[in-house]
Length: 561
Image (cartoon, rainbow, N blue to C red; front, side, top):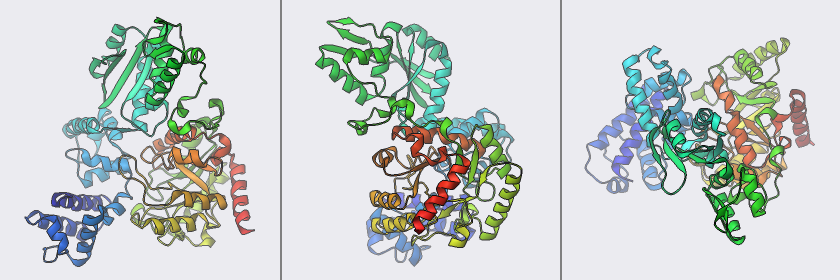
């Protein structure tokens, strides 16, 4: 770390404070400290040794934090502020010309990622917003594309949106998902599909939607970029298409099959499965597997972590259609945008049966957390909507406080149909403290679900220090459900952990939606669940409205006995 890094961190923290509409004194104090350090030629090591004493604009409290940051690499105020902002909103700071005030406006409008901003620019939405305009929109679009291109990996949501575009564009050429997107990995370096087509036809078709199109070296595929995302389209004639699909599923699967082919005196490549130098007729991947006498595994299971496990058939895995209830959803009562009526109407229009509210609790002041009085007001509105025939569960995303207690008293929690408990602060506790905190929370008699259990933000922030196995052991003992947060910037719980604990825990696949469009993020959570080998029996929001309420009653009564 250098002094320049520390100055950058102070400025970023001030930007996040402004984004969160903190008081001006706190914002200005951090910016003043950064400016003060910019005028110092002394090394960071020297400043740390003297604990920043005598440095203008840096008081004793901030000095302690800066020394800790220089030693540990963790700046508490930045971590706390960042935890209050969706990871996608944080990426908007990469866009030239956007400061905290404009980003706040975009966030309030429902724009929560570079991808959202790009789409809003292309659709002309940004030009209509106060403080922007057509010229500003064009400049922002250019900057957004640059920011997307600079990313080495992309969230699953970005990858799947590009994959959907490719599948539609090549719909007459028997397109199939390939690579990490087909396997449901949480992030991707590129987007791959396979098609039945000739080399020239592939190039001509791809050039209509992609840039920088060029042929791959050494194998049948065209590469390029769409909206800053690297793409690859593998092509083959129908009679050897199966070999192409088998080799485009990922390195681990390809190498496994190639080793098997060698054992059987065959040769497998994207150009075909050959025996004695002649390609075999392989219309499908199943033809390849049959020739190799190798069992079929769904793409979700094609990772080293799945090797040797007994897992359900692909047809048994949970699907989006199995999800009956949208749990852990935010409304305008806290930091969401939609009304309760808008949410339940959209949920039912999307084919689901019921809605479970999950607005923030009182300590989440940054997210307009609900006081007990406002929570009671929301419950009254839910009662009114229920009288109209809507199926809505009274719930809350309750903060887990530093000592592991919950943010509302038990007499309030007991009035809710279900409770999601989550960590939104104190990310820098020691592993022992964080573990004890979470064990206490999951052991609470009124908690239903532990929300986003590790606090990770993909491509932005790793999990906080915690003995996760110890927490999940306690959750299993108390029949506490673990959330698979379907927000593409979280996908927390990690599929590898869910796979390990699948036979001992129940799970809830929750969107954590703050806007109506976020309800469709359920597809990403389902991808994680399928990768973990989860069936509908593992997931509580595949239960009906009445069945879920009965589940919570049994969960609570079982803890009291």
